[in-house]
Structures are given as structure tokens and as C-alpha cells.
Image 1 (cartoon, one colour):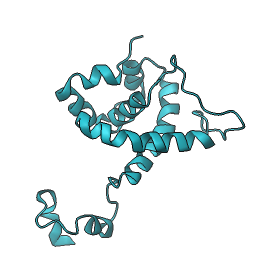
Image 2 (cartoon, one colour):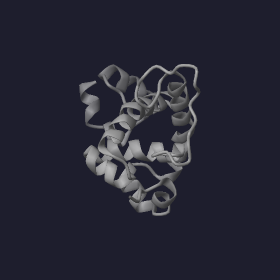
Image 3 (cartoon, helix red, strand yellow):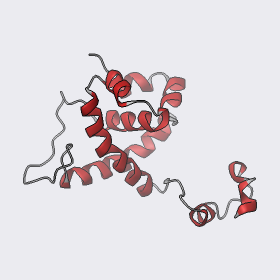
Amino acid sequence: MSRIGFQEAASKQVSFMALTGLEVAEFNQLKPFFEEAFLHRMKMFTIEGKERGNRIFVDYQNASLPKIEDKLLFVLIFVKQNLTQEVMGFMFGMSQSKVHEWLQTLIPVLRQALNLSKDLPASTKEQFSEAIKGFKNPLFVTTALKDL
């Protein structure tokens, strides 16, 4: 089975943005936060979600998602496109059950990375109001401001 990877996807800028919702530069800005959150999680848990014993995490070259870029691409595509796990497996060359394991690991990692980078979307009106303080007339919230 062939799989898509970061290098191939990033070479097609328009397709990359359509797949992930990010430009390559934005992806690269998020990557260090994602890597930090991923390594932190992998110190405590395995990909299967079990508590990690004494064995440290190692990324193998023949792993389903061998590089941090591939892991971030994988979870961003899933979140943006809302694809089934079967389709994700087809795209990334893995079984549906392996997709499920990776998503159980990477979705919380993505949330933590967005939190670390201060890009986590607001969940409440109060968080949203706090996030837009200092913006004179943010275009994307002009109509929502009435409710705040």
C-alpha cells in the first residue's frame, strides 16, 4: 500500500491547504508545539494508550507515521476533512484499527499543541471575548460581537 507523506503533500501548496486548512508555513510554525506535546505524551503512554513502562519511545523508519510531520499531517487531514478511519487508512497505508490507535493519541496531542501555541479555538463566549481583545474590528467576528 502506498501512503501520502508530508513531502509529497507540501509540494502542492493549494492541495496542502485544502487538505489541512493550513499553509505550509503555518504548518511549520505549529510543528514544534506538536512535537513537544507528542513527546510529552509518549513519555507516559504507548500508541495503544497503555501506560508506558521503563521502555522509552522510539520512532522507527518503517512505522506507519515515521516522522513528526507525517503525524501532524495525518491528524490535521482527519480533523479538517472528517474522513472515515477506513479512508484515512487507505490514504496513509494502514489498517482502520491502526488509524484508530493513532487518532486516539494524536487528537489530544493536537489540542495540546494548539494550546501551547496559543491557537486553541475558544470554547466559550468568555474565552472568545478574551482572545479578541485588542483587535479593533476583526472581520471574522463582526456579527458575533453583538452577542458578547
